[in-house]
Image (cartoon, rainbow, N blue to C red; front, side):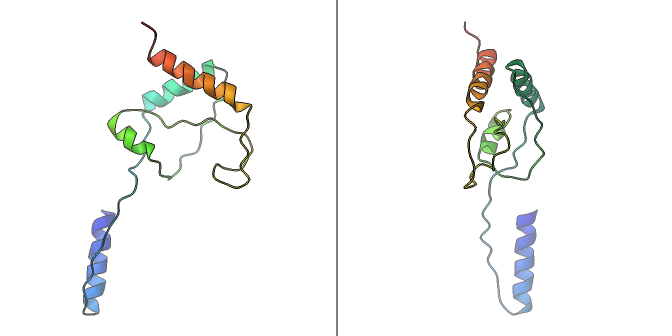
Length: 117
């Protein structure tokens, strides 16, 4: 809808001044929607490995992982880092103490989803 309206407005505005408009609209990332089932699964595993599960607020960010979620249900999950600045900020300082819990979380996710034969 946004693409169509932008083209309509551009054409109408240009026409008012005796011109024409061409819009080259570039689509960004798709909307990223976590599967409720997969999110709950990841949450349960985090609790099992002793992680402090905190629900992050919803954001209107973009992420290329959304392309994967269009193909398969999944969940975009993060390992928290405490009170440091956000990732990509010059003052960001990764908390190395999060590594064992984060690794255990990912390993447990894999072990539950792909148990040994």
